[in-house]
Image (tube, rainbow, N blue to C red; front, side, top):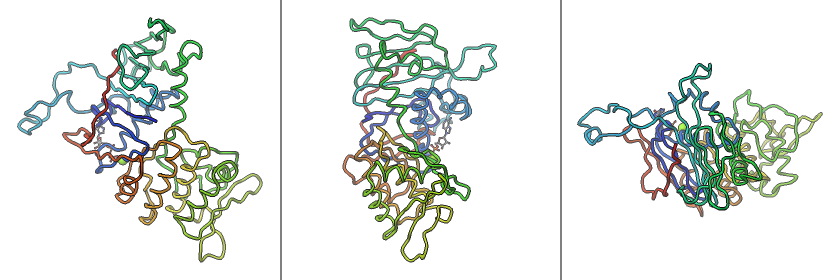
Length: 384
Ligand SMILES: Nc1ncnc2c1ncn2[C@@H]1O[C@H](COP(=O)(O)OP(=O)(O)O)[C@@H](O)[C@H]1O
Ligand SMILES: [Mg+2]
């Protein structure tokens, strides 16, 4: 289980440390920074996929994702006696992301590129990384680190042993120094991060791929756009908890059943509902009904990942589905840690009462995301 997520310098998350629980519900007003937190965690997963620099570039590069406020707020600025203004930069520009689970912690520090004649002169660079044992990084518990092009691991005698001297500024030690002999922990942690699942925009529009028949193969994890819904449901039926899936559908749509029709290898869902003479095809389902099926297929995966993160799953759901959704998420959380970003009050309240659930309310203060009433876990960033 992940105990802590830390973000610094990413959008409105200037200096943000959040404890996670089995179910973590993140809520708050529009613009309070919920989606930024979701994206920050996804960016961490991208590091393990080797895509962090590209993802950042697609988001507009460091220039746009970096915290846009001043490095510090003076007292007069905080009390509104002085307008908020930039101070002369004394600290290096940096975007930092990290997390700690019950075994290890990992953090990465990205910064501005060195001036160069490369056509990629806008790419952010990975300046430092660290992997440690336990919750908070210190000199004594570090297992591996990276400073610029140099990646080192600690040997049994506690000495720093270089494993790579020419790591490119756009490559992470997680993808390029994770040697099973020399740095097994890097490999273990990378695989954990790679298996995190994110569901943000499960498409339900008229052209959504989930509405069309699709070639089906065994699908233990629903794709992030939901295109393989029918195959994922069939997979739950064959190797997952088929009875639970039926119960979940019945809980949300009393009397309804979901079937899968296969023609020439193309899988398509059919939903029988009370009062209808024939089942409805995916193309005919309402947005909300289809989204609920997508969420059920994602959450009841027969291969639960260590972490699942949902951004505003309530979108386009009828209010009467929010409590069943809360029960569905709680059921999934028996096998996987879940982070739910939501501003649907009934969902937040349904989840907050579950065992192992914690609720964090975000708010903005002088442009910065703040979370009240938390004992922020101890946290330290790697040094450049
Ligand atoms: N580079 C930045 N620096 C500081 N704040 C930013 C930056 N980019 C976006 N923001 C602000 O961050 C806030 C967070 O937005 P978002 O996470 O989408 O909120 P939510 O999902 O809670 O509605 C927005 O109010 C936006 O103005
Ligand atoms: Mg949002």
